[in-house]
Length: 127
Image 1: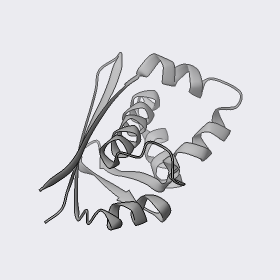
Image 2: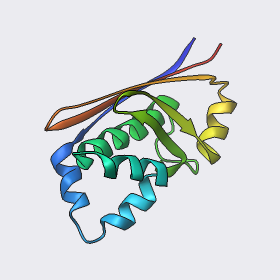
Image 3: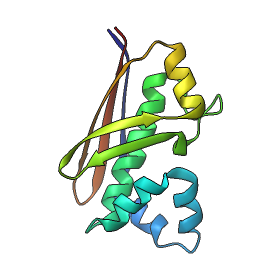
Image 4: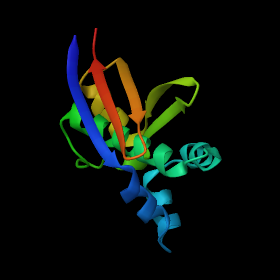
C-alpha cells in the first residue's frame, strides 16, 4: 500500500551557482553524505548529479509528510546508485525512525535530469 508520494524539481544552473560559491564545501557537507559527494564529483557534470540527489531528498520528506522538520536533515537521506545503477534511498537517524513508525518497508525512487532541470519522484510503501 502506498503511504506517500513526493516529487521535486531543482534547477541545474542554480545548483551550479551554489557549487561555484566559496561556501560550497560547507553546503555539500551539510546536505550530502561523503558517498554521495564522491559519486557526484566523479560525474562529468557534478551539478546535475547534486541537483538530482537534492531533488530526491526533498521528494522523500514530501512523501513522509514532514518536510525538513522533526529532526530530519538532508544528510539523513542518502541517494545510492545512479548513472548505470538503479537508484535507491537509505535513511538514517530521525528520518529512518519516522519511516519505521509509519511502517514503511519499501522505497522507490526515480531520478532524471536535462541540461536545465533535475527531477526526482519517491514512492513510500508498506505491506
